[in-house]
Amino acid sequence: MVGVQNLSRSDVDVDSVRLSGTVLGLTFFDYDTRVRTTVPARGSANWTVDLDIRDLDGRATGLMPIEVALRDTDLHTVAKATGTASVHGSLLSIYGLFGLGLLVLMGLLWAVALLPLGRHAAPAEWWQRGLRFLPAGCAVGLFGVFALSATRLLSPTTAVDVSLTVIAAAVCFAIGALLPRLTPARPA
Image 1 (tube, rainbow, N blue to C red):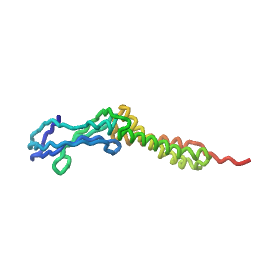
Image 2: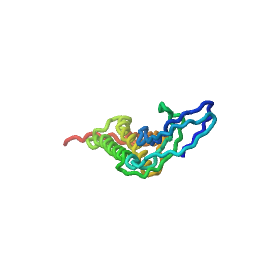
Image 3: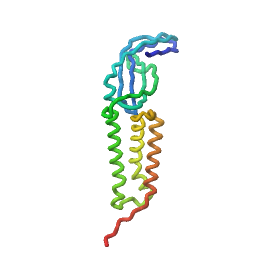
Image 4: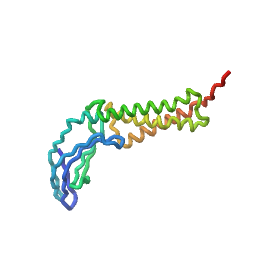
């Protein structure tokens, strides 16, 4: 059921309703349906919306922020409401595969950060060692956002996304900066 109140002095034409789910600025699902109605000036309208979301389990899983938008004939949003949906989809959904991709990226970035340590090739300056770990820290934060969402512990929001990524990046920078400078072993 969708309800809207028009507080303006003119009628508002509503052509369609869109339901969408977005995480980290990426839209993982959106569904549209036509309603073709007019909300009178200083009036309200209520109607039932029938959306076919049978394929949602292949698009997402976990807690996701959603938006319901009323759009005019030019597809401009005239009103919107936000919320959180608990999607019981598959790990093999688009969102699940995105998370697995983040996990692979995180592993690769950690390998890039740690491999020089095995060769005793860490930079001499503390801040350079810290910078080597910064991309891996960002990946940890982004994967953390996905993991919290997929396990239904926390719904991603811009504040959560940025905070978790910045904190993880700062911690990983500090870990890298605090590592001792290793000197190459000299042959005997």
